[in-house]
Length: 203
Image 1 (spheres, rainbow, N blue to C red):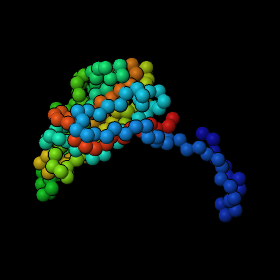
Image 2: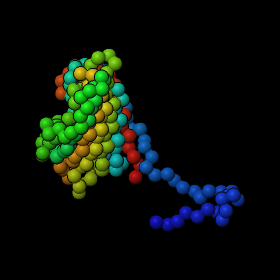
Image 3: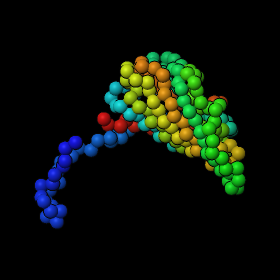
Image 4: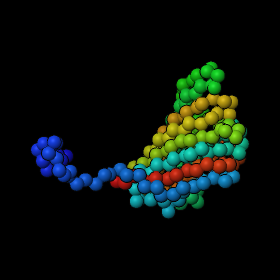
């Protein structure tokens, strides 16, 4: 890596900075807004070879049903089928509003071992008026035709029985075909409100 040199030898006499173009800039590609929505999805219009990294930000998703799970799946045929095999890992931590019930542990029921079904990202969300979920998910190089497709996700939400809960999920879609669509849904009922913003990170 080449050293960057200033035009002057002393910082006290510095009159000009070297030119530089920042990398890793996040570009907002799309915002999906829920309104009693069965699912929110993004297809190859946004998920393609334009970026190596795609980041999803979930803002105050509110569930129509109580005690329901946020889930996702990916597609290699632009959303015609969401059935890619995935191997994943999942753990959670939580604490009750009254200061009891603290927990940190692995959740075997939420991982997949070459499963093609939905990947769970959260525990049971509450649907009281003030309850919601916020989260982020990063998908790495989905257009690669050489490597599997890694992802990392973290959710934070107001759990149905009044816990603050964070879930951590990671894994890979075990395909060397390009992943070009992703769908987010709940295990039951609709996404009543909230937004998912999709960003592309510059190479």
